[in-house]
Image: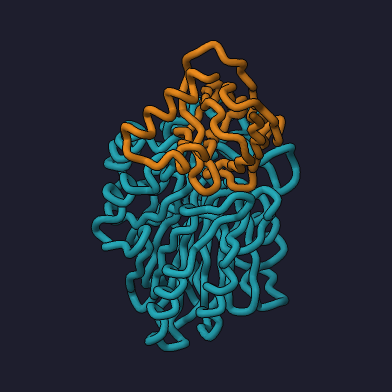
Length: 321
Length: 118
């Protein structure tokens, strides 16, 4: 398949073939790119194979990995450490390594120290050393996230239950925590303290600053019946409304879903461990068993690229198959 | 049952809590011959979702999902379970009469209620 757009009637950087290709990635991993004012998607396998890069030069590219679930050993994937390794191999094979990784939660299955140890050990094989984290609900089961914060949020000096922000190449990144202090019957939650911090954090930024927000549970209502949403995300997005480009990266649902609303692009990444059913397509959001030969086509990564002076980020999902 | 209540009372006195506070608690325990009430966790739901038991009886949850779940009391009225992997169980002993709501802190959409009668 060509990496170039042959028909672009909408001038949106996506032609019919590109769109279909995009659909084919559903259920894998994602590469996020901020570039040239358009949202471009491309599989990691393609990037690795052809050595090509996105059509426009890129000033910053980073990679999102999610939902490693180290410790999971059921039928849906008996060897999640192996698929995590393959994901890292894909990153190492990229001609231009990403500047850093973002892990959007559920490193572990049961918040066990040995699961985090295994993850850390495997991660050592990754050429890209800079990693930014936000916890998933599987990472904070027994201690309210204490161990997670000590292991993964020390360098970023996380506030409260671990939220933080940083700047790279003119892009403002915000890592949010929406898996703690959850209420019975409720969804993911940010809480007042974090929301007040967010309001203050972005207050001084110019409206032309590209914003990237990352958190584990989707910050949009994907499927509340399965808990796939965050109860107070609207308030967070309200603080970001004035910005020209906001990209929201989430995990949790183990499949690629994307929604564009005004200047905000919402995107969820694949898991490196096991797929989950499309919203409402199963009795519950548990691990989805698929034939062994199909599994890797439903796991993957997300790459993102950004070109300075332009606003929109290009986001690319790619599978492990 | 009288024995259990006595033990709880003594424990309460020893640990310095007021009797009133302990009266609202349920005990985390796995010994004794009291009747055991089972709650199965399957397809991200507690089954039965609502259960009525007598004070002093045991309540045991068993996780039949491939996903971990927890049992967490709303308002911390009884000790929360650790993360329960597939086929793992968690048992408490019903304490003072009353209504106790609980949920899974990993999947808070999952809720249940225990009614404890005298």
